[in-house]
Image 1 (cartoon, rainbow, N blue to C red):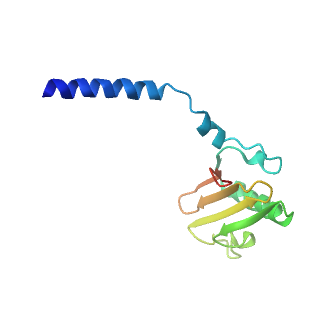
Image 2 (spheres, rainbow, N blue to C red):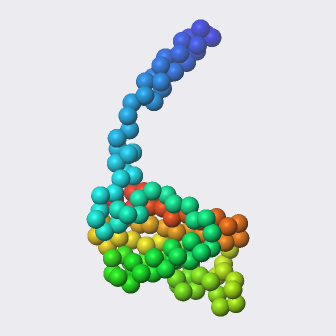
Image 3 (cartoon, rainbow, N blue to C red):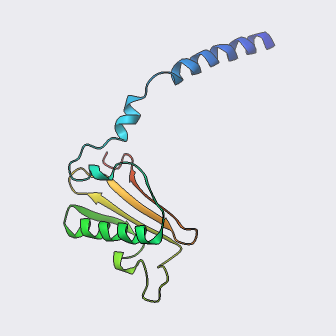
Amino acid sequence: MWKKIVQSFGKLLVVLKSSVTKPLPKVVNLLTNNCENCSFFEGKRRIKDPEEYLGMMKEFDELVKSGRFKIVDQTCDFNEVMRSNGYWYDDVINHTIQCRVCGSSYTCDCDTYHGLGFVRRLVGSND
């Protein structure tokens, strides 16, 4: 019985090994965006400090005001991210905008409590 299990396991390893070495063009294509309106957003970008985050919110706001993007989801308005008393709107702030040409969505997530932030494309958002 153990001999059959070992043989089956060996065959499984061969199948797994051969499937891992095959290229994955569909996955790569999902990460590529050829839209002239929003291709400049490609890749995940880490936000390193509050000034960079506030600059990104200004950029998102300008893209929406220009009509090239629309707001899909947001924790607060762009101008409410930093309150007049100098405190952040919340510990976690999110803004998601969508390209009006291809439908790709881009999100800016910021954890103001821990000082982490990212801007990234939501893969498969234009499907």
